[in-house]
Image 1 (cartoon, helix red, strand yellow):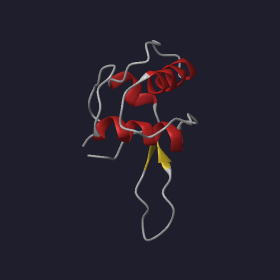
Image 2 (cartoon, helix red, strand yellow):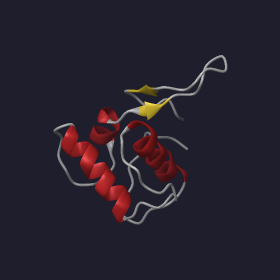
Image 3 (cartoon, helix red, strand yellow):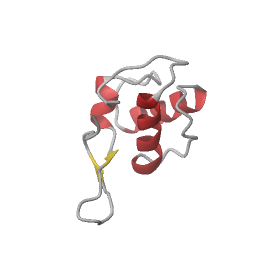
Image 4 (cartoon, helix red, strand yellow):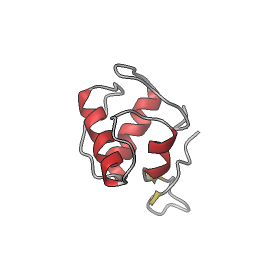
Length: 89
């Protein structure tokens, strides 16, 4: 799965789950990680969009991906950190 995607209301799957994890871990949006792009996910995305001054529509696409912070893989057994661009493919 990749964070380099778009998805619509009601879509489900691993890409949605990756975005939900990033919303929780790095963007201060405590939502369930259930892999479904439902109302809670759309509200969390709208919160991130609003916080970054981009168009608020609750959708996920290139502009939202660019402003979100993303968890990175731990290196050398250390903790992961949040980075400004997704490193998930």
